[in-house]
Length: 173
Image (cartoon, rainbow, N blue to C red; front, side, top):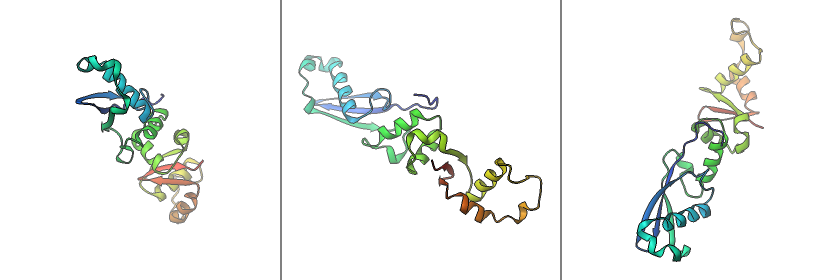
């Protein structure tokens, strides 16, 4: 894990016969799948004082798990089958959670998020102008020809190589 912003602690509710317990887990460092979560749940049951008498004979088929608190996970990934993808991308990137969410919505490969991210802009024209400035293509102090450039057209052409989601811009790799 390399993201210093990473902090996901989800809650799992485990039901076994008449018993119900809850525990916190990290969907990247503690387990990376529903199967792994079920294994954790069985261990939690075995270590629970109230269930100690049954600890040696826990039937895994009778163990039901449900993630009941997805705090910090964007809605689209706040489902038991999707949270793993989000947790992995968030943990492995250096970006804030909103950048990860935008990248995943654009189907950007998890390993490419840091390299592809270009910044946050109000619109395509703002992005195109900043890119032109960063490349040294325009003099930010000159009025002409800057005031004659069709920034809508420049943005349209630039966006062939970039994608945007909610103001987050990414280079297509």
